[in-house]
Amino acid sequence: MLVTGHVLQLGDQYRSNDDGEPSGTAGKPIYSAIVSSGLDMVMVVVIRYSFWSCFLVSMGLLYFKPSLSCSNGLSQLQHFEAEDIKEDYDTGKEGVTMVTFRVEYDKIESLEDAINSACSRKIEFYKR
Image (cartoon, rainbow, N blue to C red; front, side, top):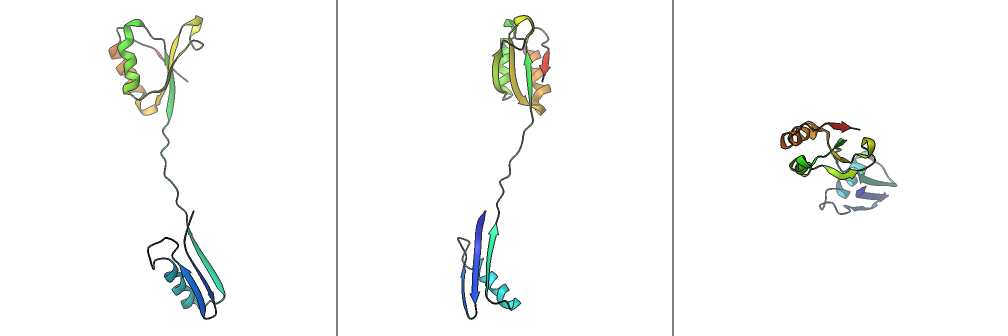
């Protein structure tokens, strides 16, 4: 929230301020509107709200069982900007270690293809 101008008028006396806006762009136009409307004993404060835009990116949580023959495939995780990459001993069945990570939904299919291309066997991906 940002105050962009204010005006106070009491009879013939008035005070206006641009409050950091370029000179003459806030207080004086407000005062002109007060005078043209015939108001007296009035205070006007103009507030500008500034909202920041942000982009939300949907992420998918994936995991797969790594193999020694697939070390080149693991480098694809960084290439596709995967996050929270870790070995997870609790996800796999029968104590099998799994690699878990998060990646943008729009990149999931391309990442799976890239990892499978780099590996000597087809990797099965699991999604949560």
